[in-house]
Image (cartoon, rainbow, N blue to C red; front, side, top):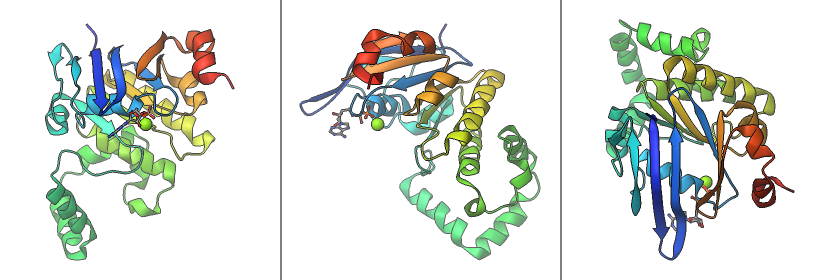
Length: 245
Ligand code: ADP
Ligand code: MG
């Protein structure tokens, strides 16, 4: 059975049919890249899988369980994690709690309190940091980190929910080409060892063709092609609609 099975998703915004019958499958441990031109419906698809948008029609199954239209909070508990293109809010906290967390993080007295309170069992957090290769920088303030390292910390935050399915919206956006490969190798290793499925959108074709196990091409709300990276790369329709320049 597939880890993720997406069946005939539809979403319109007024007169715009953003997603028109998209179906996808993703196995545990597999990396699937969702690519396509601007306005193709990638973000809309992603938002329906992450619970930010409810589909007009279609179903989403996770491990055979119908999770269609569930809110992010419920999805997180069922094993759907997400990273964002830019550092984002903690999705499972309310708006108020997000601002409270930010206040906590910025208040020096609570920061001292937190260090005392959290100092007893840092093992779990350190183990997660080790998984993303950041244990050596555990004591650094995040503001002192290089951008690629911030991305690794973000990944550790997502792994804290122990996701079965990880949705990554342009994981390498803003990174230097040399850093991209290293991050995606890490994602690939984590997917394999944790048996975690990863669905990601990506503009860098080096990342897509270098690191995805399969590639799905979305054009005008519909899947144009899906398959192994090499087959997609040489597909004449994909060349014409997206890759060919
Ligand atoms: P992509 O991520 O592939 O660039 P999107 O999913 O963002 O594409 O957009 C698909 C289509 O839906 C576009 O025509 C876009 O203008 C439209 N669209 C996306 N979100 C909204 C929205 N919230 N309201 C109205 N139209 C939207
Ligand atoms: Mg988008």
